[in-house]
Amino acid sequence: MIKVAINGYGTIGKRVADAVAAQKDMRVVGVSKTSPNAEAYIAQSRGFPLYIADLSKKPAFDKFGLPVAGSVQEMLKEADVIVDATPGGVGEKNKALYEKQGVTAIFQGGEEHEVAGFSFCSDCNYSEALGRQFIRVVSCNTTGLCRIINTIDKAYGVQKVRATMVRRGADPAVIKKGPIDAIVLDPATVPSHHGPDVQTVLPRIDIVTMATIVPTTFMHVHAVQMDLRKEATRERVIDLIRAHSRLGLVRKGPAIKSTAELKEFVMDLGRPRADMWENGIFEESITAPGKELLFFQAIHQEAVVVVENVDAIRAATETIKNAATSIQMTNEALHFTAIR
Image (tube, rainbow, N blue to C red):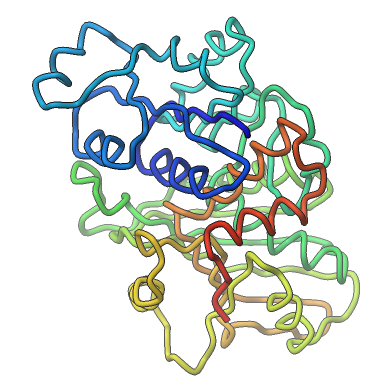
């Protein structure tokens, strides 16, 4: 049984904690919070021991009936693996603590590649992650790109990728970010950071990305164009997507043409938190003229990396040495079947 602690019980951390708790080979030994907010109550209701970085804040937790199990340092002593789901940049500061404690740590895509020295996507480089003390699970956008690029590359060879990221302005619960009435170039220069980030996982891929931020909270959307080394057919590409357990196909039948409709569809499926762990590739958009492939895909920024974190835990601890086995175990524990 792998003992897992979650440092940072927020948007990603709470989802990873639930996903870990669902696995037969893992157990959540603690989660950390910095303040006694609503998520701290959720952690308590889940039965997760609650730890805090600053014990001087313990009276604030006591005031609201939230028992504190101890400090983050004490939490680390209980864990085999720590999933660092703190805000971007904080994980880098935490690394020294993990090194001192000799604990294995999984970082998120908000950290630079150099923090862990290894960037991870289950589908692409699981075997290279085996036994590593530090692993960085790449961001939601990078995860979504890596999954589909790697799949197409294995079938046809990808000569180059050009993609535009239409990014959500903020997560649904965030009330202090925008934009409200603007489309923001993020950045105005080309490329955006997403292409170089893909290359930390798939260094052989020639990719250039551009990015904007728009006034929505649901998901990101990618407009992707690939040049292939061999001719593809639309039908074969669709078959490849259907065969992949984490590539979803948004079919023409349900008439879903927006992230709002897609989010509603997933919610009606009964998914926890209406989470979409798979890419949402729009079937109608898939076009394959000769050695070229174009499509739109939606990426749920709150959820897509959650399953990757679970696989990264198994790779780091070497409890499962085969990517396909871990991916299947993770998906089955969450009762997750990609949309078709």
